[in-house]
Image (cartoon, rainbow, N blue to C red; front, side, top):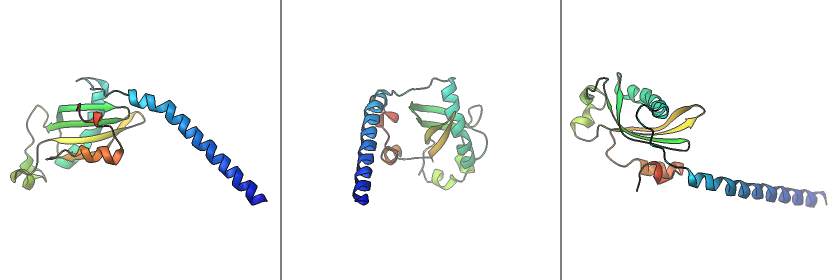
Length: 156
């Protein structure tokens, strides 16, 4: 008899938890659906935070100081997407032949871009994915892997 009562109590608890999850989804879904992509303007604090979080990872990979020429920076809720070209401070292009990417550069097997996915962590940003020299649309995999909306990466 005790096991039947226990099973009934467990089932009741599971139903209560399921109902709470459905209610939470109903409350949160409209907020998620309304979230808009933000395009942080040059000089904005948000843009600086995202790029400052990305810079060390790229500097580690290619060596030396860099700054970014941003093609696209998009933020949606706690996610940020960056499409940028690194350059040396003052506007000098990266000499890819002086990096570990020399062979790929000389064989025309890479671009001069950086594509990155970052996630807000507390007050800062964490690099989740960073691809240097992509020749394909790598963010298609990120959409699937992280269940992200296409709007984070493109207007289409």
